[in-house]
Length: 496
Image 1 (cartoon, one colour):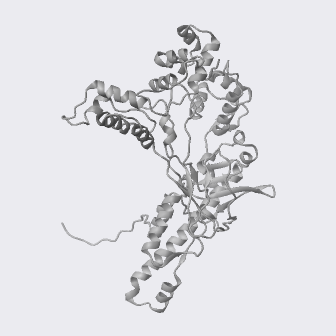
Image 2 (cartoon, rainbow, N blue to C red):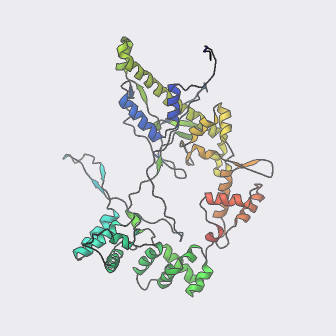
Image 3 (cartoon, one colour):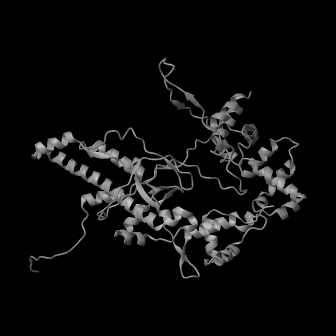
């Protein structure tokens, strides 16, 4: 085969380093962005924070549905050229949360108690302000070990109870079987099943009542047995938790009356007594923290117009180090190539961070303009909107809008919401229009909140009521929206 040389022209997309960095910043949350900025500050001597930024901590605001937090320092930034196509994702500064334990008896959340506090300081000046210092609260294990220390038990029994305490989970339940706990001891110290049972009895006599239970029913039974004998409906409640708790969870009050051989007033008293118990006795000792986010945008009404402005507390303020920049300006030889490359990286980072927030503001303002009725009247006035509408409005790609609205938060007079919250599918109306899925969920919530507890609304009846308002929704769609709102079905909403 003869070898020849040929020229061929082709087109392909090449991502420049600056664009790659812009896309990478786009995918970061606020916490990750701050970590990235801190890393760049450590690695790049040409980059530094503006003076005074560290003295102003970022404001924290509650999650959606809660009252707005304290006022924030803000300014309105306008993007006149409209040619920015890079965007960013400013995420959440979220403390860990405790998942609710699914409970078949539909109990409310229980537990409480906070950490004790102490005051500390130095110096002898009586007018000196002393900062409060948080003292760590006792854990569940510490609380139980203190009670164990007060018992006059042989060493072997104390070791058995201590092993049982170590096997408890955060809610105070014994998740391991007695046989598994017995295997933790050596063959020389082999335990008899009776010894483990006696140790468990000691543990279950500790406070709070219900500790050491292996099932929710056993936990409730331990708490009922700890009550006074003359507590109203105590015998019937014990009988209920011992074998008929599913009937109470399913609100099958008719069958429950038959098995308890009592009237409706007795069943109601049993239900209220069981609901007053704590199915998670160890949760009071958990170190919980509130869920907070840093909003990227603040929305307020100015001269009868809803406007969006950036939250400066969420924006890292960066600048070039003038000392190193002047050195590069005076000396442009080959020995300073590394500093020159770092200077270029610093400029890219500053520009990309700025461009990121400019795009967030543009998208947020477009959302505010199209969802103006939501800010005036609430969820029931939410209009259907998809990402394509905002993308066409701002001449950006739909994927850019998706990235901008993910884990970005907007502080409004109605609470703090993720930008993606304002987007949703639509449902047809009999007039040929469309209703937002968010508005329909709000209507379902209103209808169920106003229903008669003795005769709650079925999904079919809710669909009929919405049809009377001109909104055509199928029963299965109502069921899907109701489940998304964590609203139980009609049989579980029925009350005595």
